[in-house]
Length: 351
Image 1: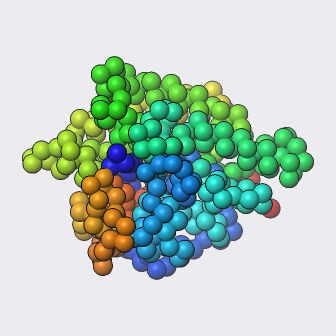
Image 2: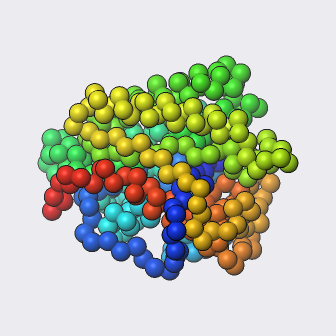
C-alpha cells in the first residue's frame, strides 16, 4: 500500500515568496565542497527505480516538468533536495547513490529512498526500501571510494568534515508503520510517546554514526503535519476537519523529542553542529490549491501512468495524494535553507 508514502508539505512554506519556476536559483561558488542527502520520498531521485517495490515513480506524468523527464522523483519537477543543492551553489544535481560514479562522490551523494524510515521494518509492505541504516551503510561505501581516491581514511574524513548533510527521516515510521495496523503492531504495543521515544533512541545511534563517519554540519528535518495529508484525512478524518489531529499530535511528540536529542548531541559533540530544521508556517505564497492533487490518482494515491495533469501546476501544493509539487518544493527549500543558516558560519575554504 504505497498510498502511505511520505510527505512533508504544508510546513515548508515561506511568507511572500513570488514563484517563477522557470528561473534557475542563482548562487555563487558552492558554500561547501559536497552535499550528502539522507531521507525518504521527499528527496529520492532514483534510488528506488531498480528495487522490487511499488514505491517508485519512474514514469510519466512524474517528471513532466523536469528536464530529463521521469527520474524517480516523487513530483512533477525538482524536489526539495534539488532546490537546496541549487541554493547551496551546486551546478549539477546531487546524483543518487544507485547511479553514482567515483568522481561523482566528491560533490556528494543522494541516498534517499521512498517509503524508508528510521526503523528497518518501516515501509516493508511496499517491497524493498533503503532504510536509514542501509543508507548509512551505502555512505560507508562512498567514504571508502573517497578514501581510495584521496589517499587514505584520514584525508577523506578531513574532506567530509567540510561537507553539509541533510537528514529527512521519520515520516514513514508513522505513515508506513504506526498508522498501518493491518501490517504493523506498533500502535498496539506503544503509546505515541513510547513510539516516539523508540524512534529517537534509534535516531540517536544513527546520527552518532553519521558523526563518526565525518559529518560535522548536519540539518535534521522535523516531521510535518502528517495528519493534513489528503490521503490521511480521507482515511482517518471527518467532515469537520481537513486534518487528523491525532496524527499531527503524534508528529509533534516526535519533534519535541528530536529537539532534545539534537541539543544533547551538540553538547556531547562539541565540534559538530546539528540543526533542528522546522520550517512550519501558515503562509502559502502563490499556491492557492492546498488540498487537491494535480494529477488523476490511482487507488493507491499515486498519479496514474500517463495521467492528465492540471495546467496551473504552480498553484497547487500537492502533486499526487501525498507529495508536493515543484512549486511546493521550492517554497520548502527556501524556508529550509533559511533554517539551515547557522551551518553557514565559519565555512571552510572549499578550494
